[in-house]
Image 1 (cartoon, rainbow, N blue to C red):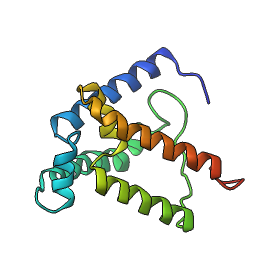
Image 2: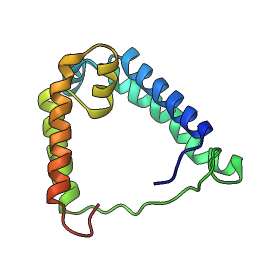
Image 3: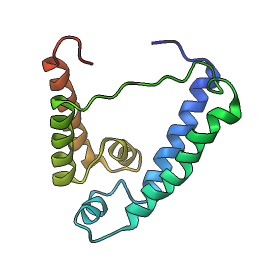
Image 4: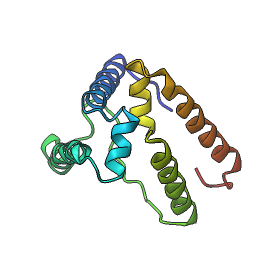
Length: 143
């Protein structure tokens, strides 16, 4: 891992704060709101996700061309080869089951801690335990 410059650190901190604020403002940090969305009772989160795609897609499509070079704060853009294998499908299924049962997704859970939702800590402990277990059982050569 490379060391961050002060400008990169500030940029990451501000972007993280903006993301967390957006999650909290859109009520994505409330498990009951997420569960009502997953039960097709509340479509508000679809608007949140659609808005995120509407902003991000043009930024990714045109931003690289407009900049004419690498990322603003250094480094380079990289393409990661994705694979659809057994581990990906199993991980997606387990994530979906956990999300559906609890209404808690990792990003919003961390934002909920910042908003004073300490009961979410139990779900975060489960998320950390699952990630740790996956790290212990990962096959050699797989990230």
